[in-house]
Image (cartoon, rainbow, N blue to C red):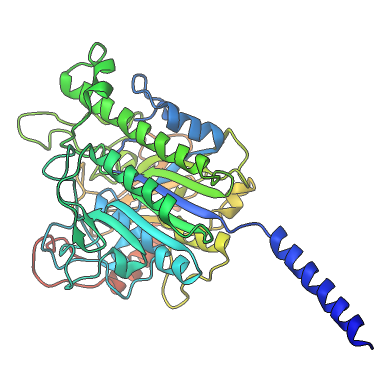
Length: 458
């Protein structure tokens, strides 16, 4: 075989290999937009009669609306920990919201979706609320950068001193100081800046965790004014306007993706960390105007209104526009879903509670190895401290797992008809599953030293 023939052969082989690589689709980008205390029916596309959310309505029209989308907990910190790890929050020791200086935190031993994707070559960014530790921006506990984020711009909990011109943001370990604008605007500005400055050759994970519409809110007057005539009070108009301001900022972020040529190859997931604020929690005023109708309960409840949240997913490469899914999904499904899409192996050395949602995109049911599960020992609205959903059925129980409520959510998602007495076989079946899962999770969850926020432990 002549040398010239070999050179020609290897030249053709190189050309073919290069062409095949060029033809390979780019890896999918992931964008997760998480609101704080947004109610199930606070958006126009989820039935609110007054609040206008044209950008989120368009997102739903362009993708899939998830009617049975759940947060991992009825309160913020556990819900966020579950989303990051793909695990029920009590497994990882995040039992309640985390006050400042609390020893409770997302431990370094936990593996987050950001860490997994970063190891697979993704660029990773977190902007907005963090609330996964008590000692924020301290070497005493892991920070966002220790959980897989190349770039982070965050607050420990809420924007302070108010949502207008907050001063408590930290960027990659350095305090930012005063910022100009409302928190949602400030967060989206940072996200858009990062999108333009990142390494354009790499896929990315972008977490955008907004503070709004968490109380006490602050809203630009241009968003409040359209609601003054229709609202019952000025406070209600400000809440309605705040949700519209969130919608506006989401619209800016989506436009940034479109302008950067990222629309087709980016999966965007939008949701909330729990249901709307509990009524009458602030002395002298019923400050919450979030809506969860027709669900029962609100934030801090294990009834549907506390844990069922609006869910929207758009992925033009795989999701046909205008779909609605009634399949039960949870925020802790994101880790196995993103891993499946990115070709990443999830951790095998620990229990994962989420399931890949890829079958959902093909119109098939999600393959779940275990039911959806929640535990919150400070839940209000009754004696229930544990909840489980298996298919159409939901079981609630007290702390001792001896008193139960049973509902068929397909026919009664407002949870008005307790079927515990009339469906003894189903009650026994689900109670057995609950006891097994409850014992397993309780055995795994750590016990924290005494300190702020650690009174609510397993």
